[in-house]
Image 1 (cartoon, rainbow, N blue to C red):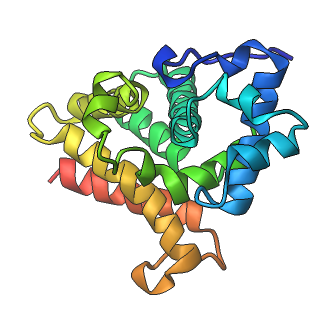
Image 2: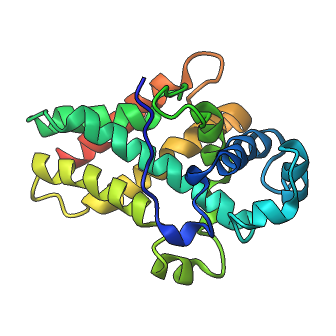
Image 3: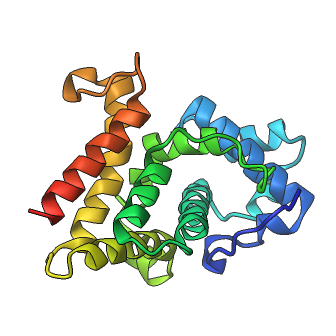
Length: 224
């Protein structure tokens, strides 16, 4: 089995957690704990107890828990970008490429053996519940200058390129992609917690329904 590493912005961490066994344990267990406790209930003190280490050792990798959350969600976007690139680079038809991208974004996530230290299913749940917290902050402009959102913007740009290939005259490819990315997470959250806000149902398959909804929304808009 081939084990891969994703290259992330060095400003996200003080020490690359992919570079050591302790760093990998920090990443692995922080995903589990944020999924279990929520971001508000998660602390470095609790994490250090879980991994049988010290708070100081965690701070050697991340200066605070917000930076850790940004790192985890950035890793998730980079993983989706890698998967979309892998599945579409040999395809010619932009409509097929767009459908592949939307399927990857909306499908229920399962363990990827190429990244054995990451629980992608739990991480996806964190993205659904917590991703707004990484940019709805006072320091968002500073974080943007430091390149924290470069991976997310790259992913959106890639999908927007598919839309432009389908309809070069459509004036809002980046807008509809960034909207679709938000909707993809919001609709799953609504299905699980606020069901009156969506037709998706957690009792059936909200992930498949979400794919059909986004595909319909985008294609009807760009081909109108």
